[in-house]
Length: 337
Ligand SMILES: Cc1cc2nc3c(=O)[nH]c(=O)nc-3n(C[C@H](O)[C@H](O)[C@H](O)COP(=O)(O)O)c2cc1C
Image 1: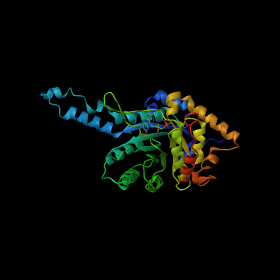
Image 2: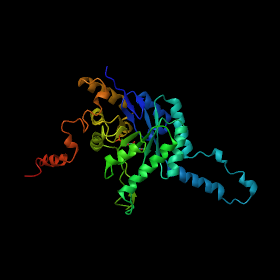
Image 3: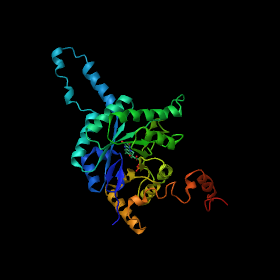
Image 4: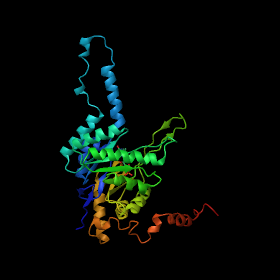
């Protein structure tokens, strides 16, 4: 029997196919379905600081600034304790998930201010999160902000938060750094326990009729996994932190490649959103099959086996790739004469 177990952020998991942050964790029954389908852990949807802030500001304006004229009438205003904001809802959902499920729950935080990251980080830990995933979804649009300054924000945030929470912290990163490898090393030095490669940036689209900019959310395709696989392969063995791959994990082939590159776990989102929770168990079984067929005894044996350090033709992970890819081009048949 193949050993599928793995370790991620110090958590012992039954296998490496983990549902990543998505709206599924907002509903207890959906989260339960994922556990029943074999999920070895669950990453919650993100708590967005701006949501908690705008609600808090709105609420305080409602309570404090409202001129209703009569002192007695003020007693009709709602008691603060009865008002549940986004933060309360999130913490309650986290507690419910912890009570109802037996798998580790990784809370996800998307902050905008240092205070927000720290306060919410502490609250998530207190509510029982087994680990924190920090989704630093930040697009530097200021032409006077240098890459170094952008990187320093990440490091500063992590360094501060590390002093206030003891649970493992993993950083869900963008691929858009001038040196991804150095960024990851800086995060490791600042106390990160893991890195998730990579955040998918959703690109805004222009509506040609209304000229409005509209958000555009589409499921991923498996080709997106290759960028992630490359960076994990390059970093495997150079850093000690846990690595997770998110983006384009749709089936056993991508999962095997992610692990071979050096990921400790693979995160799955589009696949389960579009096809259902049973995909977790199916991919797990396919992974077991694949390992058996290829005479592996464990997932552990697979991890990093085709990393930059261990691959026979590792130079393909670097620039050499570029030349041979261009050389491999041939004209589309029947299109060019
Ligand atoms: C509908 C939807 C909601 C998502 N919500 C979150 C979120 O709250 N926090 C987060 O970090 N990522 C979120 N993601 C990103 C996913 O966790 C995942 O990283 C991304 O979709 C790439 O994985 P995939 O290719 O398996 O879909 C969301 C993705 C989708 C499609």
